[in-house]
Image 1 (tube, rainbow, N blue to C red):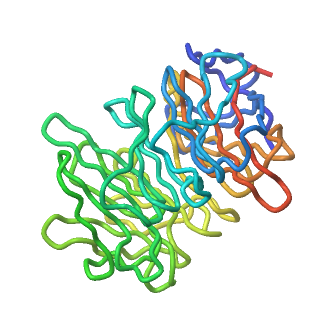
Image 2 (cartoon, rainbow, N blue to C red):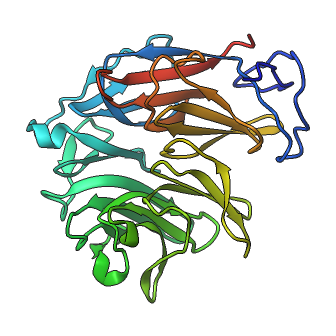
Length: 342
């Protein structure tokens, strides 16, 4: 692995110059660096999702919701035991978190959808009792607010739901073209009507699905035969990833092409850093860091990260936080990436 550092100057992550590996203004240029150190916290364990901002850092785990402080060296995670949140084991299995623009936190569990309010109380969201929530996305513009909720349903009758402007939820499934039995992520372009849902399940019924108001969902042709875990649009380029499929991409009317192979990615999170746009990709074999979508650096057991399995990434208070679910004999946890310049 190339251990060179690139010249970067960023208020959040001051970088030191070691050597250059490419042109920062050319995304196709090979640029890598490895000047990050990771602090891993094993309490809480089995972290499936993370959400945060300048004040809060939430960890959704297989056994409850935890709240930490992203502004301190030790986040001090404590379990949330607010009134209104059932204590049964099924509800405590958390799969997805979303900090809404309002400041509330949506909590997707194996047994319904809940909302943590700014006063510390937690209440259930109507219509989701007994449903397994697997993905959450909010689109808020000056003219509308849309909330998407992904579901897991072996029958594929209800695998995704939508709420507009705090109204009633509409549920979609195979009758509406959303044939996957589990929705893993929903992407909403903030600047257009583009909405893409990612799904897994039967090979002929999973993958990427584009939503249209008039016709529901249409399954898109893509090389993700074993299902899609994430979708992201950067400028005019589409990126997606699936189980064992690595990352694929396409631009305009071009065919899909392979960007990277040999792993399972679970998301793609941007963090703007000076002239570069950092892109973090959690995978089953570590976390990948792209600069301007050039050649990535992979952090794993062989390169500073102490837990390989990564399920989610969040940028909170200028820091990068990585969720580690339980995997095999490893209990998981949460890591914070700190740039040291070394």
